[in-house]
Image (tube, rainbow, N blue to C red):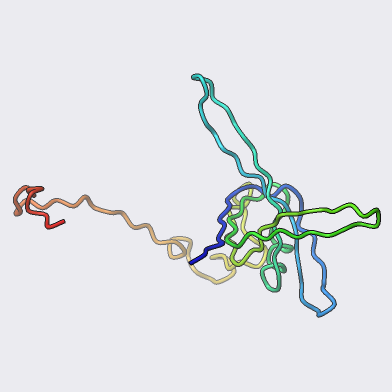
Length: 153
């Protein structure tokens, strides 16, 4: 069995560029930067990786409408490497993530998206928009301590 799956969570490095294919399908391409933080010899270091993202159809339209340089976004997709030869007979390669799903991050400044339903637009009170659920700690005073030797695996 084979699996080609990529998840990247990062910041958009350039505004999405939207185009139409000859078939009429929408395509958008942009870049994402991801950071890795680590310690080397007790010194904090940061490593940045850049990813090329390509989206098709409705995902491309959403990306072009809502994503801007600096936006936080999660992309789920597959990795694909394209190759071509230019007019000078030089071979070129480009590795991209073909997006199959996307999750928009919070907007800078905490603003709302243009077309998203807000309490003011829907007539709801702000308290009804996002319920606050507080989890109570689980206490089981009636049960005994679990003995590890009783676990069958």
